[in-house]
Image 1: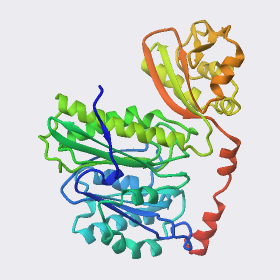
Image 2 (image 1 turned 90 degrees about the horizontal axis):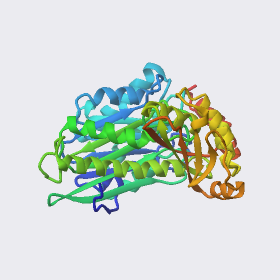
Image 3 (image 1 turned 180 degrees about the vertical axis):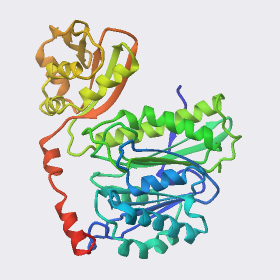
Image 4 (image 1 turned 90 degrees about the vertical axis):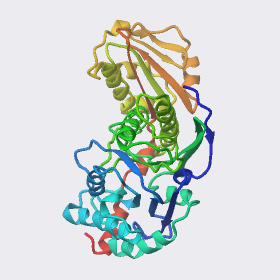
Length: 417
């Protein structure tokens, strides 16, 4: 489906009747003025939908927001960075509730109408003594042109904001969809290993919005991996406030299909931005699996190869080592026949029928030396297919993730541990 989308500015504030703000609380460092608490707010009633991590260890805000979404009428989302509020017990849940209740009260809404998300270090209590005093400033500063401030406030190891927004015509009505995301490490496709927030002024009911979000997430945020780790805090939240005043979108109609495509389009742009900003990565790799016995087998191969430390290390070294790829295929759990497997770098065969192809190795090396390339694995057994977006694994990634000790030292100073 090829729709004439127009890219617009604004991120989460691109859609009508949405505003945002961000403030600095010093969550990780009380001496820092970095934005670390953000708020998205709809001026009119919303329906809402979301997807969350499948990690069985779930952060307090994930548990709370999941329960709030049952009513499907979130009006705002408050997010902090620097601290995941995960593995913090009953006090962590109480802190998440405080964030929802206090923000909701200031704007005249119930606690259940507030979504709460956190991202950062796992295992440390939130420094609520620095967060709570900032709620009034956060609410009072809400504005329709502060989408970028919000996008900055949710970053952790990211190097830049990730925003994207579009407008398009739907039977003469202008619809807007915009969003932002954060994520650079702890990225693995098990429902959205990051935080993402999407807003739209489309008029759609809750049930159909949930369906669109589920399908779009599966085709975008569930198709990425950087390091194979699934976070405790992953969340995708979507708010639709109907401010465009289009006739209500319903499944089974062309208008619904157009909206669902636009939603996937925005999510896909944010997805690719996350992968390209992976922690200390140097390669953006599209891995496509075809010829599998089933889609599930194709998925097994895609995720196994994409998360292999040996494979990812060879990409970092610009080594077209198809042997590491085929060995990962072999332990993926998918049904295979070694003599049917073909592996291509770009359009050039590296492995043919399970053995070395005749392609000049220098040609293959030139392909993997580029910052972006595609690898296709043909299992030669059926019609199953899948794909995943992934990266290399660099020495700098290891160095970057060696320690979070300084955060624990600050928590000790704060009397939280």
